[in-house]
Length: 332
Length: 284
Image 1 (cartoon, rainbow over the protein chains, first blue to last red):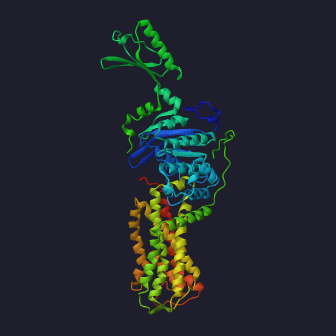
Image 2: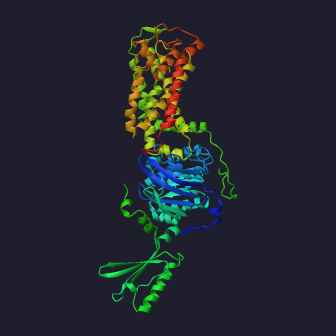
């Protein structure tokens, strides 16, 4: 069953019992003097989706390329099924697949020929019919790849990656270029892969995608991981915001201190606005306790919390904080 | 696999049977043939040898080796470098285009080993070189004083080794260029040098002995000489002057240095390709 917020309990026995399929420890990657990746570490276990988010040029693709075996780490270690993936050696290559950032299809072949080739290259492939049905391209078997739309090519990319029944799959912006329907279909497919026990690394520019699918995620910026953890950890670290406009007759010194919350007072348009950032306490309940304490305080002081707003953290808030502003989000 | 024993989980996979790289190579060759046939510009590479064949026919007919004239000897030499045109021209072009469009990377991440990918292009170069060789052999047979090769195995060997050497050379060009157009231009340089040093466009008889020895270290002249020897049954490896007719064993013995040169180039270029080939369009 897919829920909108599939955050597993970190004590999930499945997550702790299995050896990580992918492990990256203190990975550094240099191109000449430029260091694209500066000490990245994470693990992905079977059935787990790890979201790697970040601005353009954050080092996500370099990290994936290292896992795919195209680059040797400048330092640090990378292991896939306990093996060094450099050169995609036997023992790794039959069990791993990927959707690349771009398509990588032979344009002069038909969809059918493309799938047939991929099947003949693979060890234990899905059938062509199953693959095409999975990604909704059954009607397109005789079409030449060059005649497919961008979204259809993306579906075929995903189909080819699933065809080999990989146990580890790297998805580098798999839904870029898809329409809303394609994206939702893809999310459903990815969720199913997770349920089947596939270890998944996903990069995406759509934060909603990561929020829906990622069990754990990391936000990279300029080669470093800014924030890492389960979605809940990441959001709870950012805190809930409770804000209100202070009545003119209440001095700021009267504002209460709340446990586990930080107070900030801003002057905007001649009015003072108080914002409590609540990080302490249980994530699900902390905003309630803060609001309740503030209401009690207001009652006591005979004042009102005007323009009261309570806002939980969104992944976007955290992302923008890590990326210091939205400017870097614009594609290069 | 990790050596630590983890509790068995329902998702724990069975070991996968290995797909034979030979089977993968042959399968990729099949797709390469389909793509070659659909890729119109590739047919220009087939026309080039025919054009050079026509120019060779204009050379004087006086016999130089056995009953064969300079024109015929040049034609034979041309057969030896059909794979040069396909290999250096086609392989460098399509592999650069495929690297840039992520086709190569897609193949690699789906578990296809490099050897099968390189083998596929060597396969298509060999198949089309062989087809063109058979076609030209048919033309030669249909000529007024038509002839069949005296040693078809040596002819076959030349086409095979040539296909490997020149495809590898085409692949070795790709890391130096950024796109397919540049690959076409860049591959023209070695292609022209090798064509003119093959004996398939103009006879190399006028070259001084030392120059001929140096040129003989390039891969195209040995490939051409093997075909000339295969057709005539004469030991032409030291030049046409004084070439003598020899038996099969004698011919192969005389061919050894040429075979060694081709083998050496395969080793060197194989190493260069293995070490320097780029799968990824990103520089670095």
